[in-house]
Image (cartoon, rainbow, N blue to C red; front, side):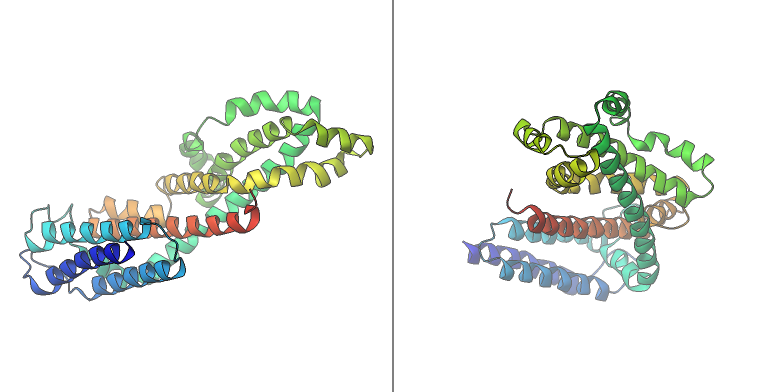
Amino acid sequence: MKIKNMLIAHVFLFILLSILLLIPKQRPMVKDSGAMLVAIVLIETIFLIAVASNKTADKGAYDIVTFIWIFFIIWELTTSVYNIGHPVLAPSPENVFKVFQVQWQKLLLNVVYSLRLLFSGLFLGLTSAIFLGLFAGWITRLKNFTQPIANVMAPIPAVVFSPYLVSVMPSFRSASMLVIFLGVFWPTFLTTINRIAFIEPQILDTARSFNLSHSIMIRKILLPYILPGVVSGSKITLTTSLLMLNFAELMGATHGMGYYVQNSITYANYTHAVAGIIVIGIVVTVLNIWVTKIQKHAIGWR
């Protein structure tokens, strides 16, 4: 079965390379295919490493890479080869991948800027929500005060506040960080309170029998209890943070992945816009893989 799947994937790869290298282009101003060939080699290398490193892998990797080759074939035929798509709105794949070769430094700087903003807001939001949520979940009076507020605030998307925050905050960076902070804080804060509310009574009874103080109870009992849940939900938290970040960067940023795409669209440079979207997809994929590995190592027993 693996041999069959491998053969199917590489048949489409062969078709793609044949179209790319042998069929004349009808669309004018198509760049050379060198950058795209480099991208194909990278994708194929990652695919082969993934298959080799996981001998029990299902057909997922084969299906994904086959889909990529089919997508590239359709993209190449409808743009560069037969010039069916709109020459501005549907840029040729050669031109899109050429952007990576020409503007890799600019793209990298925007990625770094976005990631620094993302992790700053994510870290502050998570730590604040967990710290305050532990106290609010354990101390009944504090819980009765904060839980109704959290029930109202948690379902409201932080992007709703983005235009206002961009206007009132001293800098775009602080506004974006606050948007990410709010998008992470309220759902995590409410989830922390709810997790503590459903803690097993046996754990609490045993802890109370030792007459532990609030601080020890929170540090030694409650925090270890809720951390696995926080880690298991980290992928959703990360996705929410990325959504907040990209939306905030559309509101007037001067750097970042979202800004790069929005600025390219503003000037009708859809070749750069598509390249920026691909970069965002790559970053999201890498972050998800990274979070999945952390989850497996941290809570692999669950």
